Length: 437
Image 1 (cartoon, rainbow, N blue to C red):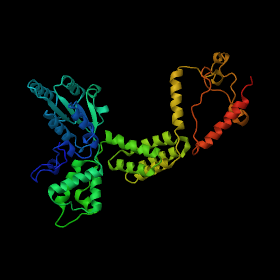
Image 2 (image 1 turned 60 degrees about the horizontal axis):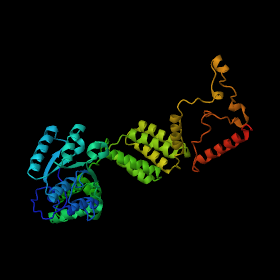
Image 3 (image 1 turned 180 degrees about the horizontal axis):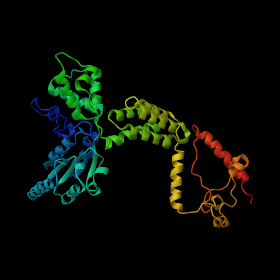
Image 4 (image 1 turned 90 degrees about the vertical axis):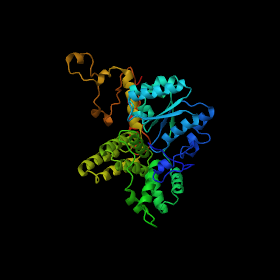
């Protein structure tokens, strides 16, 4: 897998891909990762200390992970070995380890770069542990997936995780300028089309350079592309999104937090991105229903109704017409008054339910279907609320050993204001009608 970035000192044939021609020769040439390779970056400090431990490089595609691994081998004078977890098995690893042991016996260390390291199974990952511990190799693993989920704890405890960021538009812009200097002519794009290309790259430097090459190939003599013609030329780039992995979870998290934060515009943006990437509408509406009950709750009971109606509308209309119903539900939930009082109340009740074990409810609220149970006091003293003044008896329904508890405290927003008034009213009646001692 090629990585990118600087034209420093490279004299390559124009037939080679730009991503290869612009590969950095120094860590300082890598763009968009100043927190790692800048003057005070984590990698810079490690190299300054004179020692380099095993690392896991985690980040999106096209952010420089492979390039950084190569440059680290050069900076530390280690032999560079590269394998891919997609094409390698235990037998391949044994050969690499034996070669590293031979080098070590001759006084030369080995930096082993493993691309897509998350593709290895547990047994394969465990095979790295002894050669990491005895210093046979310095392992640099690259992954686009969250190491906490994809790599085992034993390996993670022996390696430092470094996070590579998706390239921002400034970094992508810097890459395009370097590409223009390498090619010797500007990209045939107007200002708006250039901005559009930056967005199409989606934080992936390698993709940005590939798009730039497509533009140069397609442009006629003196032609300058607008955003519309650029779209036709490159046929838009498919979103980087894996429904089973981080892209999926990151976007649904962003959607949920936008709704919770009462920002319908951001919520619609993330909803549109997930639809665009082919996300299941059923998954989306299920999560939006969850938002309605967790973050809106009884502050607006209608939110749950609207979300369920959106599901029915989508089932009836299908795609793409039914997507509007889901978008409408997102707008409703995002703009609804917020309360997690019901959510918190249920969680607190669950804690008590687990700790209380088998505490028996008070006997006066239990039915007595048998004569023996009636003789034992089941149902004695129960007052039927509908026969009481205000249809409220004020009895205690908790187990006697617990005493009365309060889990649900409504907020002063939306419909919960009305619920708070009702609870205050019943609390006053309960106090007035409590047995006098």
